[in-house]
Structure formats: structure tokens, C-alpha cells
Length: 101
Figure 1 (cartoon, rainbow, N blue to C red):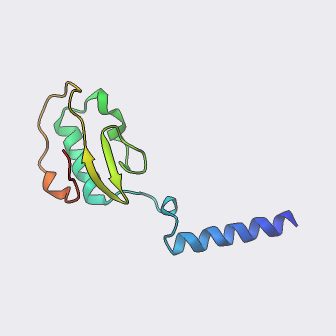
Figure 2 (cartoon, rainbow, N blue to C red; figure 1 turned 90 degrees about the vertical axis):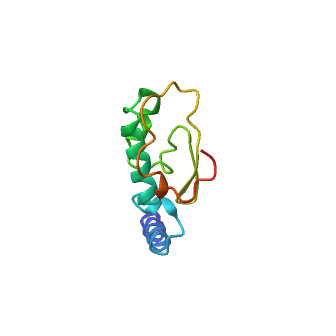
């Protein structure tokens, strides 16, 4: 009986993944352009230890420090007062949903 319920639950989970009703089913929760722009920014800021999470692969799915998301898009970047040095990076224009920087 338990095995039957387990199969049903797996089947339902797979259907939800296929229909994209469950964002955690996909490999990354963040728009690829936003991820690329933030990784470029991280590198341009000399890969600061204060933002070590930014070395990851998924800003929204991994809740990167200073990054706020809405759905799959980065909407805010708040990294002031961290003593960062370097440049912002050249891909800021890719962050089309950012409303607060």
C-alpha cells in the first residue's frame, strides 16, 4: 500500500514539474541573462569574500547576499557598505528587471 502511494506521489510530482507549476523542478530558478550579469559583476568587483555566494550558479534559487528576485528575475541589488572595490561589470544592461541598485 505504501509503495502504491509513493508511485502516485512521484507521478504527481513529475506532472507538476512538466507543467512548471513547481519552480524547484527546474535546474535553475534565475533567468540566465541575470545570472551571467551578476557573475560578471562579481568578477569585476575582484571576487569579494563578502559576496562568496555569488560564485554559485543560481542567484534567486540560492538567495545570494544583496540580491532580491521576483520569480526568475533579479529585481534589486543592494551591496553598499560592504567595502567592495573594482568595477560594476559590463553586463548591467542585461538586468532588465532591476528597479533598485
